[in-house]
Amino acid sequence: MSATGQGEVNAESWNFARIPHFARLSGLPVALLLAFAAIPQEGLGRDETRALERFSDLPAEEQTRIEAVVFSAILATDQPLLRAAAALAEHPRRLAAAKLKPEPARAFDAEEFAPALALKTKTFAPSSAAWKSVHRRLLGGRNPPPWPPERMRWDPGRDALILPESPPDSATTLTALLRGDWPPDDRMLCAALAALDDEPSRNATADYFEHAYRNRDGGVYSGIRLADVWDCGREFEVSDVETIAWLRRVGGGTTLVSPVPASRHKEIYKQIEVSFVGWRAHWSLREALAHRMLEPWTDPEPQWRGARDDLDKAWILCAHDPERMSARMRTHPERDAFLSAVRADFLAAADEAELARRDAAYAARAELAAAIREAAREALREEGLLGLGVR
View (cartoon, rainbow, N blue to C red):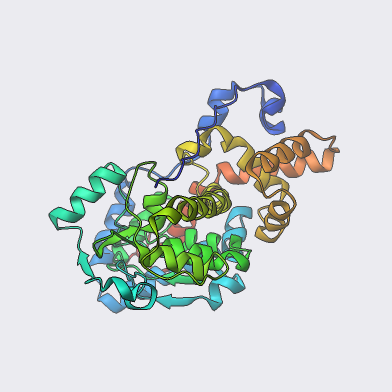
């Protein structure tokens, strides 16, 4: 059984009404104005390179301390997007989250959900031929999975942070900050997702699809989630273990036991598919919004690229406040309704004060990478690693 993928949205053509107020006043070509949005630098200047060389000579404990000081200084910077990022880092849901070690082969217990099958569970690692075959056949060899080992993840089923297997070292993190990018461990993306993960009633569904995929012979594929295979658009096996687990955990309970009659397969698999499509639509919007808040210099995932400007407008309307964004999503939970409401609200009559606020928000988004970069440089100056009076 396979899930149906979301179609890509066609990008809208630019017109004068969609140009930010500050852009229209400047009289510059739209393409040039869009290019003004700062992006992280590909390389570092001579001063930053020398600072990193000095940094690399320091003891490991001192490197860790300076990394923390620089990151804290960035979040303490008086810039609208950085203030919003600092609020994400202090969001109660992120602070309360359990911190869990990665379990890429976390799967439902065959003994609990399908004991009659007497399955012998075998876990396939990404290095195995069996894993590579399934990865290639179902997922086209795309990555992730497996999840990059240097990144943490937000687990929406358990309201938890999944810690990275191999966290980036302090020099790598500092390099990213000096380029004007966020730390490469995705800590800020996780903070944004935690803040937007606002419907605990969906936790059981989310947790189900976070479990590892298993075939009917009991083979568990480490790092390939049920969410990945239900999103693949291809035919795949569904084990009775996962069938009964869904019926009990998500579907409201069941008296059905394994082996599941073949006559029930199509009906139950359709129910699982419907629950996945609903979950995917819910979570995909939140993922797209999280990325657009933190990384306005990047393109969204393909299915959201045509809505990039509307996602930006949504954040501007909400003053980059995740609580206000959650309220908007509760009012308009469906993608099309959400985007239509954003467009309508943005085109609604606004006084000069509101236009000025929007101008400032557009400017802050365009300046975010530069603000990260300059705050990192200033913090390194304070530490004596950059500029005059270096260590």
